[in-house]
Length: 251
Image (tube, rainbow, N blue to C red):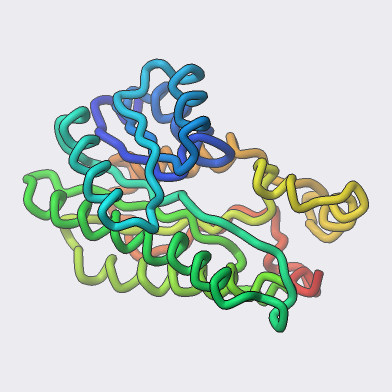
């Protein structure tokens, strides 16, 4: 029960890494609010995790929607100790073929959305005695040049820069860290694969497999807990040694 009575908001919390984190946080004693864009996913996660304190169907790229959902979650939770910015989208195209509106959409969700929610959370945490912690789901894409993901790579690089700046400005009351997952078998990732591509990707990962969302959730528990009281401004990579393997970025 390392997160007992911690009040937590998780964006992008209905599937994949976010859903695994929500489930694990509930097991660790946290009070959890989950946000997701798709109303059907919101209904599904309410059924799967009935202990959730709040579920909101909200697009984090919509600042008005974020303001409303944040106010509702605060009311249901009675405050906020931990924010996990996990919502994100990924679209696979060659650089010269990316439509401008698609690039804008990826940046709005993956960067602007994090800014909108984090700013609200930081203001709240700075005003309370115990401060708080903000965690961001970044990616090895933020530090490596994966082909056909120029918009996603750029968004995750911006996210890491934002995290570092926030960690400096919000210390010592609010801790800010990022998790860099490598290839993780989420629904978003799986949808992009053919069987041949999956086998090829597994082949270049030294651990020879994708991460499971539950493995990422264990790291988030540590970073959200009081055990990580001195961790801030850091990037925690969990990728089965993929980012240090020669040639991994050139898929």
